[in-house]
Amino acid sequence: MTNKITYTQQGDYLLPNLILPEQPKVEIGVWGKRHLKYIKRYRPILYTNLLTSCKLIAYLADINEQAEDMFFRLVKQLAEKEGVSEQLKADNQMLWVRRMNNIRNQATEIVNNELINV
Image (cartoon, rainbow, N blue to C red):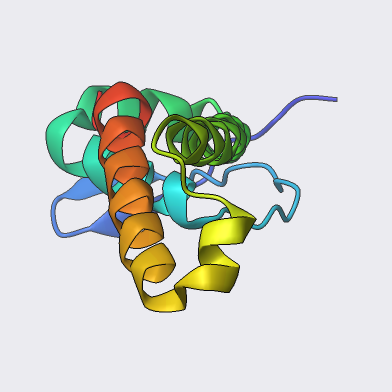
């Protein structure tokens, strides 16, 4: 079976009608979406190569999974290191919330620097 290439006229040019194959529907999380935004803006060649090779969705899903794992691991490690525990939560909820928000912000910054904005 031969693939026949069809063309569409745009002004003085004939452009090939290119259609990418169907890709599986995968939900990309917040980390994957952040990385997509980054590569579109700062690494357009990588973005185009992944898109045209139909590897973009799998790539973003993998980045998202790695980032989620790293984030939760960092939050746990930082909380243990700084003594933020369930006991603190029971004793002083407002202090616990403040400290956990700081820890989550630190973890987010680390994940962004290590995985998302590279």
